[in-house]
Image (cartoon, rainbow, N blue to C red):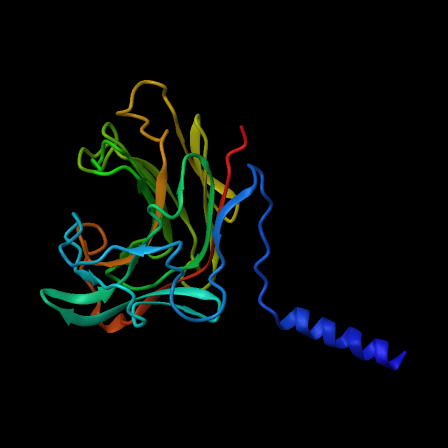
Amino acid sequence: MKFLLIVGIIVYLVACQSPTKQHSVDNNGQLIWQDEFEGNGMPDTTKWSYDVGGHGWGNQELQYYTRAQPKNVRIENGRLIIEAHKENIGNNAYTSAKLISKGKGDFTYGQVEVRAKLPKGRGTWPAIWMLASKTPLQWPDDGEIDIMEHVGYRQGFIHGTVHTQAYNHIKGTQRGDTIYIPDCSENFHVYKINWTPEKIDWFVDDKKYFTFYNEKKSNQEWPFDKPFYLILNVAIGGSWGGAQGVDDSIFPQRMEIDWVRVYAHRK
């Protein structure tokens, strides 16, 4: 009896102390792609590549995205860390990282879930988003799905948005909405879209806050019928993120991602 009691106590303690990465309830289909970011080291190169450079990325952003630099990207204690630093590379005053799944994780429809904790501070601009996998890409004609964006000067406001030829921020016609998550930089939340041929729904922790419908007109309104890939990044400054400047006292700042999971669309 004492032996069984001791074994039971050990099992209980291990269960309590072990990190849990249980899958959420799948309402759309089977799990078809994932990264749980287990252990320590660098991101899995069979799942992720890097966008590299410091040319502003079309948004007058201030950071230089490095390639496989542990200061800017690493897996640490079972979480992906994307970390921005105040340091000069060329004409850029900041460094960060941008991971893409293009050619390694491309999907047409499905449920995409990312459990993340966001950076904090004026000038930060973290994003979890998707672009069409085709090459060459034509923006905004080929579409953009922003699963989560957050700008540091509006702390706690989570943005979900689409950009298409008909609906984009250059024209001021982009379609999207926001939800207020006051502890988004202190605690992890699940940012999710459910993408079907009829619509895309946005959620935080399973609370839906925006729907974009397929109007069934043309590709100008709905280019979301082809493969897209995932992007994870922390930008600094830029036309939106830096609209109220950058607070240099906040660095380094990081986005932590516990896991990424993609479920197939159930027809």
